[in-house]
Length: 99
Image 1 (spheres, rainbow, N blue to C red):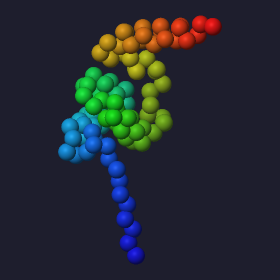
Image 2: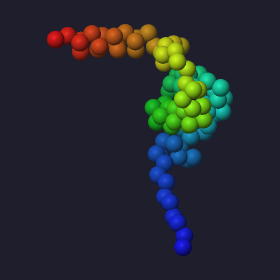
Image 3: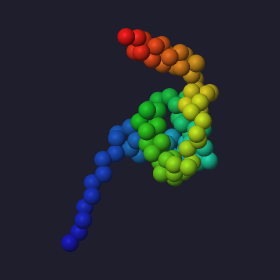
């Protein structure tokens, strides 16, 4: 009896695509810091959303819950146009909070 498992990999992360090598690069280069990996991925552009979701899962599995930094500011600190993103989020929250 043999067992066959078929895995489906998003085309943007397939070895033939351009995102998979970058994913491996960020995971290796920034293996000591989840925030540094996330920031480098976000600032790299390209397929950063798909790559970032896989990178986050990989880093989370590697570092565990204890490995995630508690400082929430790392999500926008150093991010290209981070101040603009924070301003947009504040405006959205203010508008959504109005009765």
